[in-house]
Amino acid sequence: MDYQIIKLNREQVDEIDERLEQFDNAYIKQDLSGSVQLGIVSNDKLVAGINAVITTFRIMYISTLWVDADFRGKGLGKQLIEETEARAVKMGVNTLRADTFDFQGVEFYLATGFTEAGSYTNQEDGYSEHFFVKRI
Image (cartoon, rainbow, N blue to C red; front, side, top):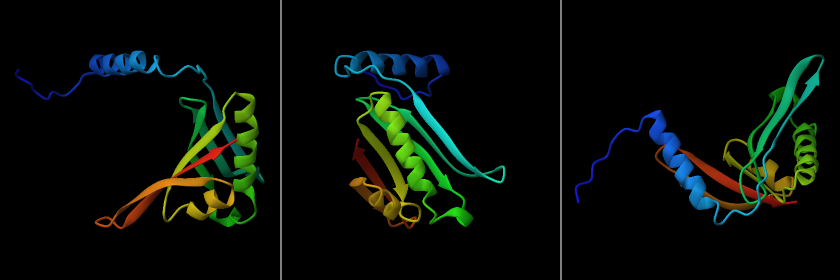
């Protein structure tokens, strides 16, 4: 057989996404969707926020969690995690998932009840990435 690597166009990307979804449907029985986007303001300034979305298998992935440097250590991140958990449970979610670099929030996720599921180190570029889960 003759194989060739090509650059996909938008239609082809949509096609492979659809084909993967069809395959996955044989294994993924929960059909959940939804997201949580929350922020904390102080004096009309956004000082913290979280963005999370349900992925598959009743998992909510936290893609962004940010607390302004001047407001860290005051429990704002913990409040956002707790409120996200409460909302996620109401949506049928049973697991939170997050990832972070070593210079970001490793200790924070451990302190808020997450378990580190794995990590890797890129010595060439000088960082490590850590992956966390939390059953709720």
